[in-house]
Length: 114
Image 1 (cartoon, one colour):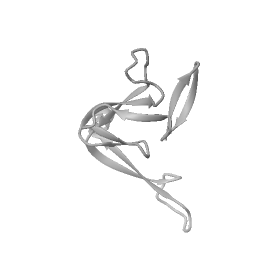
Image 2 (cartoon, rainbow, N blue to C red):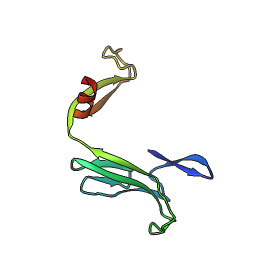
Image 3 (tube, helix red, strand yellow):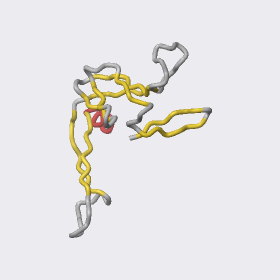
Image 4 (cartoon, rainbow, N blue to C red):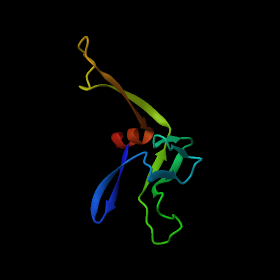
């Protein structure tokens, strides 16, 4: 997993987990962050902020703006299975394939029907 940082006007990719950077979730009742993998897990329907933090910067400093994103945890409405790499269910014997599971919420259904 990676994140991006702007330093001296240039965008730079940060590999996570990192010894210097970590992700922090604001509302831990909605989601939590596994610090060893930097993977978030939803716990309750709702939204929360995730922030990219630097261990070398005091978070109480008023002049420091940290990158943030919003995580929305929603109930699933349906699943879609894809067989990769060709997204087709016809396969060759002996070929290597991955089954990808895509989870969609009801918002996708209402958006596509209207």
